[in-house]
Length: 218
Image 1 (cartoon, rainbow, N blue to C red):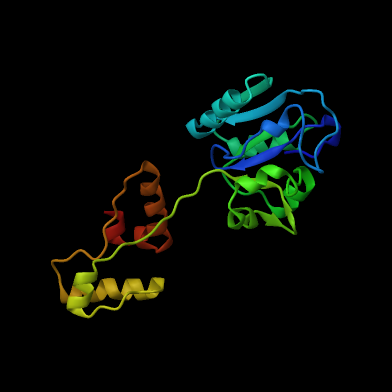
Image 2: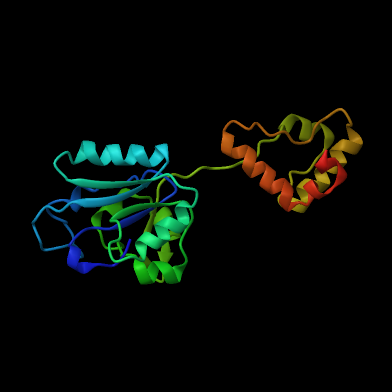
């Protein structure tokens, strides 16, 4: 979101997918000290990447504000981050845009609007808002979060006297120990319930250097 007070419009950048906040305050009146004193309804410019999550957000905006004019630009190219960055730095930036990665603090302070005093932030968990803090200001909002966890078999751990690892090195050591003590057991398995998790797993394996070994190549 580009700073542009003359537009008298609420501007927000969403992280990852469809935003969870209401944009009701974007239309006629912004019930906040940081908002506009202009009662004229203005069109919102949305930059939408080729993503089903953000399309859901766009539809939610239309449903909750059917009278609000929306100018939607669709982008389906191969470099959405670069294109979004270019648009935000332009003279005609979008009002709401989708990011797949967090912009640098300097970029946010230069081009984005501080929304820390807007009322809709109350719809968010405070801990999530605090994660977006940049020197006391908030320029971006989270859209969706996922929790990645590991489960272990407490019965097997108790039977074999294995200690629950608390660090990566302890986990690796435990896996080696399990393979030595119980060759028939597979220490770790990955469910891969979503397509994206496979890429995440491959990235983690690559970070461990496994793909550079002969077994990794095979």
